[in-house]
Length: 480
Ligand code: HEM
Image 1: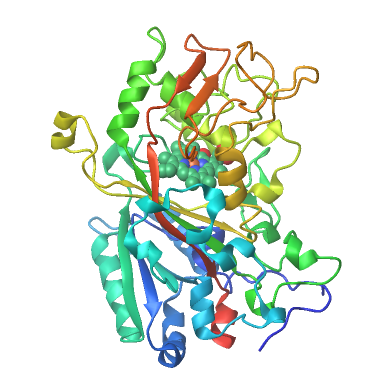
Image 2 (image 1 turned 45 degrees about the horizontal axis):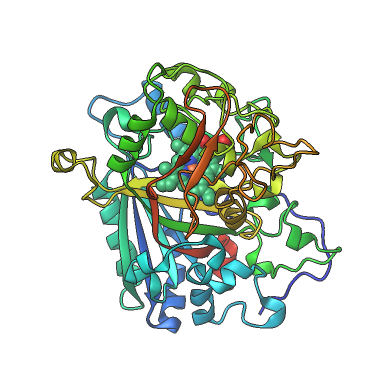
């Protein structure tokens, strides 16, 4: 058994061969399969794990893959030759750790309350758990993420994984995600370019842009500099087996695309760009360009330019360009607050489900299941995903409460006499869980459609999820 490090020692340099590949850089993915499993025979599972390790993709391997992709795109490939890529990562829930007897002693606990309680018991998220799929109410011990350039390769990898773990695990649920086809590649189902903004991890990301937000490694990896639990008064509260691992929050998010589109169309100001209202809800145009930076709907060049599309700052005293309730502003308020480093997460989502069908277009309602397999990594769930969802996205009062005598962000241009301190600008119209509250948002200033809107329904509906821990390779070898 390993114990928490008594005092904080100087850390060895980060070994990129020791960190799983999805965390810091991201597995190569056009398609992805998520295998949620229960451990059936613990002893056999643990002895088979050693055979699974060579299949796991490390950060160092992902960097090599990226170089291959760059060479491929640079024109090196032979005609007819496809770049064959795949990746495998493994993570465990608290129930999985318990099943294996890891971290059960008081001084060996991983030290993260939401993880230990599990997402189903996380009332702060305000989910309607009646809508959760039965599989996510069962005991899920682990998650294996398999990615690749095509479904056939991912299926073959899944078969290989399941053969190694034969009869030691059982499937609880398998979900397939895929990048949307053609020109929608990289866009989530509402049509907005996703994966644009991401904090650069210091000492890892080589393509840091001037002005881009950064994080110290410990904001994402346990035990590294910036992990507040590992820096607690000179004592490292993290057990050493948890070092260089990361918490993985998985959310199974369904999207009601036709209903969203209708609301956006019905409420768009008549003379404006036809997607202004949608862009106000998201914070970016479909091209990926931030509405805070450009009034142009189709600036694809800006949308695709990482040196410009992720380096802007909001004017904290104004929502003339980007409403306070915009999804991107709610989930990353940037200069609205003085420091947000500990709230930053690494996002690795992928869409699931088909494109909108002709039948749905005729019926004018969502029939098929589609949405986002949302994944976020961080070293502290209460500081990261949980805080973003519960204290920012779900809170109508954020950013800041209305204080007439003491103007603060969230105050300027709020001319509506009904606007009361407890209400604030409203919740995040994309992911905010209003629960039984009215779904009200307040967009002020800047556009012809300024005012209050009551949203008729939620367009993103959580139907499951779990908190996992994605260990380092050395921990998987020595402790698991
Ligand atoms: C950014 C869509 C769920 C946190 C974005 C962007 C889009 C988007 C289009 C802008 C592109 C980008 O910066 O990458 C969605 C959709 C969701 C969803 C459709 C659900 C179906 C979530 C959840 C969270 C979240 C559950 C966390 C609680 C963020 C963050 C950003 C972001 C932190 C970056 C904002 C910035 O740095 O400017 N999302 N998202 N998203 N989203 Fe979401």
